Image (cartoon, rainbow, N blue to C red; front, side, top):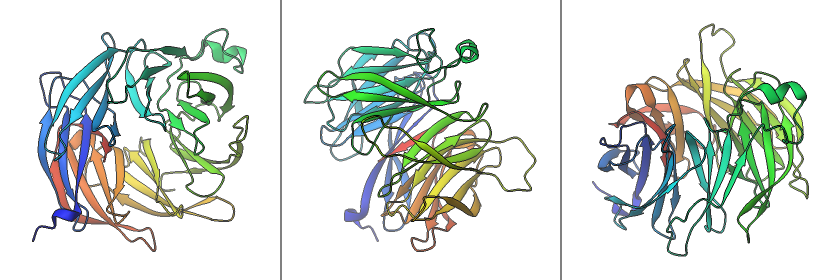
Length: 357
């Protein structure tokens, strides 16, 4: 039996040529976990990451390209059945791989992996996308806080994350093993460099997540398959203090694997990380007094190369994008224990890398 009130729309970005569907619109039943592909959008080369602006009825995508890199705005149908390209703006940094919106919804910020940079774009009240207003390169000779030998390394920003207060912007840089922390000027739409936080050499910080209640933040490190935990006061300087680094892989795994994505449930009691190669989700219990992590479960994702994933249905389900098997797989989640179990629900979408809803 259908339950219209439980229906949600998920938008799935992925790798595709511009004449192929790169964004898929997926109807998700948050009561049962069932999902089906309801529509798709072509016309964007490699829309590998998306950001949703529900209030404006807009979806934003990066076009992860070397030359001709863009950020694209789409108007979404209120019924969730379609989306149409509205604006395109050139991105100065090659290979944009992540996009997010400022808390006010007045700006979009994109991280460019190949270009080693972050770009800021203005958004109108109706959600239209304006030309780039700031371009911030990483790793230049004037980049304050880098050691001399690190100036020879290649920067690869991989995500843009606002701190809980909205006062700071954090950018994990996989190539420089650092998280850049900027002060955010909302009025001017500008990033003001404050400092960098250094991780161990070769860690490769890729994505990060803040604890919803405590003063903790976690990075997932692609190259050494670890998760690092920090305390953060989110004060005037946004400084962090390292607490712990743990592996995201089982102790007996000896193959090649790289982590990808990280999310936390809304209670802050459980954290999840995806492993590409081991092809699993690692579940960690979070100590609420210290913020420290302990491994609780490794769950096979039922496909190859799990990239992004999303907690849905009041955190009762996890939807996983398996890039190299072109599938979305749904896992039931026990909200009391945090444990995951596979369901029969899945959908075929081309090379998925991002889920937003």
